[in-house]
Length: 463
Image 1: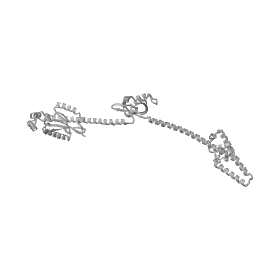
Image 2: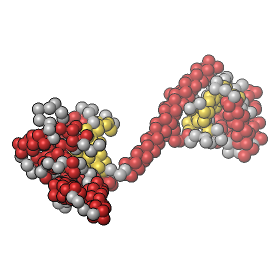
Image 3: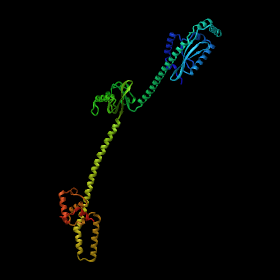
Image 4: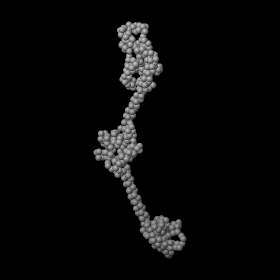
């Protein structure tokens, strides 16, 4: 895409420079674009402006000559001196901006020596050919400036340096314009990010809000005019919920942020309409130009805190229910243990009574003289009783013929591995009573003063 010369070069200012140069040296200067458009022109000779360029045929010759001259400049960057078909000389040098040939810098028209009679005769022929006013045309020819070759080389060197300077200026301006464009693009991009963020974003300078995004306005239920120019303190309670002074805390946090230390903390805000919300705040220092600013990001965590609080309360409720169920379970277990003890006590009493008050009489009856049928029935009764006892009893108490019911219970618990304290708690006895029963049990089993473990002995009876 061709560069637009008027957008990268101040042509008006350059024209004033050419005018000053022409006034001081008499040397005409012009800038011509690649398509032949004259962008700046100072000092064109009258013989060209009033005559050659006025006649269609001679103007066509001029335009073709300029095209050839521009084509020569395309081949390189060195200044050239060119003689036109009418005998006038022009100097030219390419104008390069950002490695691109964008235009040409021309000087002329001039002669290298005063016109002699032959040259003047040639001018008269041109006047006659194109019907120019001979006297006026001749005077214009005599006004053409004359420069020596050394002088021509000098001002062509000057024009080349001028062209290079203009090219550098143009390149610098291109970079500046590109930078400005990039800046505008970046500014637009970051503004879009700024406005589309899901958190409130504030820019602070010296503790005062100077900019914010739409999310910030939504958080505080306020307009931009109500927010800009205020301090965050204006939207905070005097004392934070944890007892901190809002003024002291925010000043401390801003000072640490200005020292380059990023700050993250929780905060409680109060809107102007009286409603409030909890927030997480992040403060970061950054530069705009050569000025320090603070970027504050505010995230509303009110709902999150409510959810956390609800979860904590639910967890507390579950803990209380768990403790209650544990107590109920313990009570139920104790009740079941008690029922089991009662059940075993009934069995034990029944077994003891059978062995004390039934089996002895059956045995005595067996020793009596009874008929064969009665003896058979007696055997059946004894067998069935023993069978009943063996089926429902998991203990060995039918072997404890001399034990009292309480001693039977104590003996059974000793056999199952319970110590004195546990037996006392289960039977509602004192430990000393249990010890007394243990002593009686050992005596009744003939274990007094013998180094035999009572639990091991009782366990052996179940074999």
